[in-house]
Length: 176
Image (cartoon, rainbow, N blue to C red; front, side):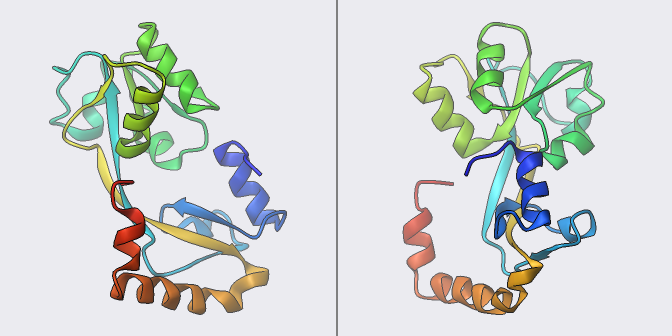
């Protein structure tokens, strides 16, 4: 099942699905029925994409203030940190915001470096590229609905085992 970001969290919190993946730490405070698996799943670089590679991001989130930005509704980090941009567009699907950028309707698109690079390439948007430095590098975690709380330690150990024997790196090589 594929749901918009916010709806996906709500569905997991309600127990309509068993859990959520690739989420920032600490969401259990806002979604009390979700239990965080304590082992980091992956580290992701959150970046701004632009057609103008000269846009400076030296001041982190404050660098966004003079620009029109777009990001996916429900992405908590962007909602918390990018609201000071001159104009903020929240969209449901990543291809919407990349097309907005290509059409000149926004100056920056906020997304993950790996997924955004792949999406721009697949859409044939060769003039769009990620800017440096990243806005933030974040450890991402898995969450399970509390009805599966007994699985949390086992899942954490399974992730540690995959990392220890090299399987984790083989699976993720080239993805992030």
